[in-house]
Image: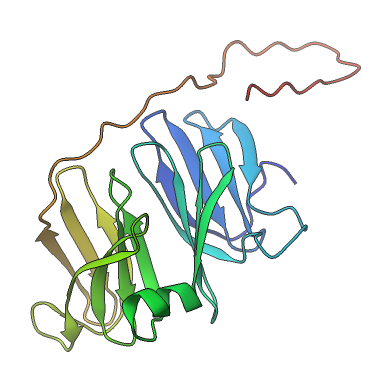
Length: 212
């Protein structure tokens, strides 16, 4: 049901203290405030092929757009606004065309400017991708066990200073890189709901109001 999590796989927290949770089993994103109050969910409506399919990882940019990596053989990255409106979807075919090679993405993150960082299992490389201009930037890495080499990249994370952390499960290491971009957009603050007083009263009906 709403607010109930099933197989949560990824989590991201915005500057507005909203907590976004990627639920693999429910194929949706559930959103809570910082006090655990359920706000809404999005991504799965049983309507068409644009619905999320087993989301694994999630990240936010400065506009609080939500980037979701969907798992499976036909991986996909779906990009939503903070209130769940679908902005764009990037599938395997589109990535292969942009990168001029066959990709198998194992990890994803995004910086505050909306630039994607992706790891490819086949080449064991990390790519920077400007999805708005369909531009691949500065791939690096290779297969191996030395510095700058990987065998299984499972997580990527970048902070507001442009430092990219790479988790390699098989090599049992975390490497941190200083990326070229260090000037980022300021996160946008919006109004959020907070839990006030709790009233113990008898209730005959409940109404839900949505502020668009």
